[in-house]
Length: 140
Image 1 (cartoon, one colour):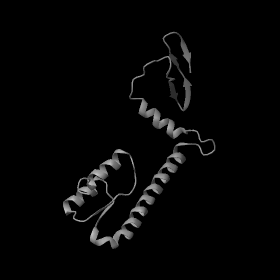
Image 2 (tube, helix red, strand yellow):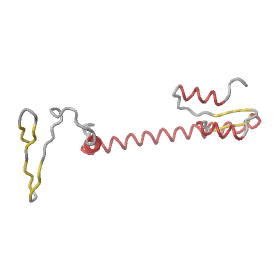
Image 3 (spheres, helix red, strand yellow):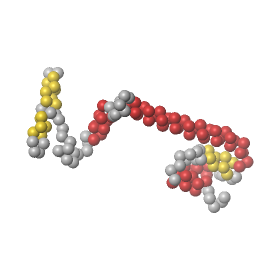
Image 4 (cartoon, one colour):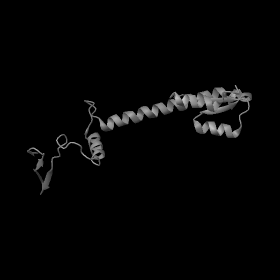
């Protein structure tokens, strides 16, 4: 179809958010166009006179897709095991500290909501100090 190119089809696939293998089959695709399609996200390209490779190309594309999905699932499991308690499924200290460290660079909008508690450590023992609210003193 001369009016509808492989680049157009690839662009439509990306616009719709489809994450599927995309194999370009063309009768006269140039090397530059093939490289451009591969950079844009095509899985493979074939010439119409070499369709014997189609079986291998489809198998390879599906295998790549399966491996990518397995990797994504393994990364998700690793994240859950690292940052969530296995018994309760609730976030653990590692996730809390990661979030807390990331949020300390942002200014606190309402000090009454987020009140710091200061603890000073002296000679190996912790002694609590007080945190101040604009209305009253709060002991930690």
